[in-house]
Image (cartoon, rainbow, N blue to C red):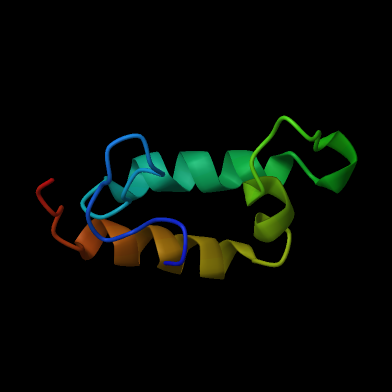
Amino acid sequence: MTCHAPSPEPGGIPSLNGLSAEHLLTRLRGFKGNGPAQTTAAMTIMPLLMQGYDEAQIRALAEWFASRQASPR
């Protein structure tokens, strides 16, 4: 929530609210698959953050953000 604000900011980090759970699961699992050994300075911090979550937690995150109404700009 610190990075992904509830409503999108032009040029900022996109909001996750209202995205489909399946889309979010794909992205979150992809970040987890890029573990610390594959992370470069050019990547986001997400691969490092996702290492701390198990599959149940990843699913819960995806479902929670998907349940949130997308906020207008």
